[in-house]
Length: 71
Image 1 (cartoon, rainbow, N blue to C red):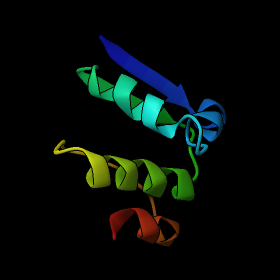
Image 2 (cartoon, one colour):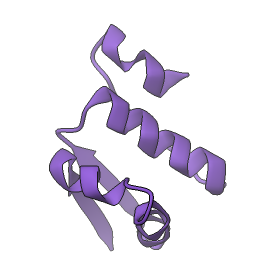
Image 3 (cartoon, rainbow, N blue to C red):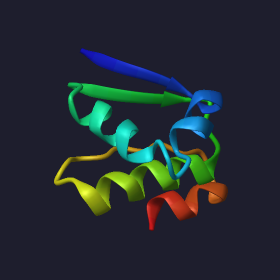
Image 4 (cartoon, rainbow, N blue to C red):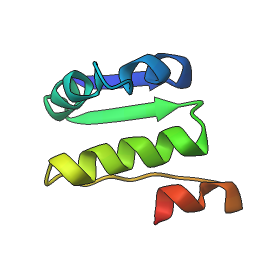
C-alpha cells in the first residue's frame, strides 16, 4: 500500500514522540508521498530516512529554499 501525507499531518508525525512510528509505517509502504510540505519538512523526512534506513528517497523542490533538503 501507499501513504499520502499532507504538510499539516507531517507536522504531527515528525514530532519526537511519533517520528519513529511514522518511519516504521512509511517503511511498510511501497511509496510515501508528502504533499504541500515546507522545505524544512522535506529535509526532516529525508534526514529521518537516511539516518535510520537503507531506503531510497526522492525529494523535489523548486528553488533555493530547498537547499537544506538537498544537502
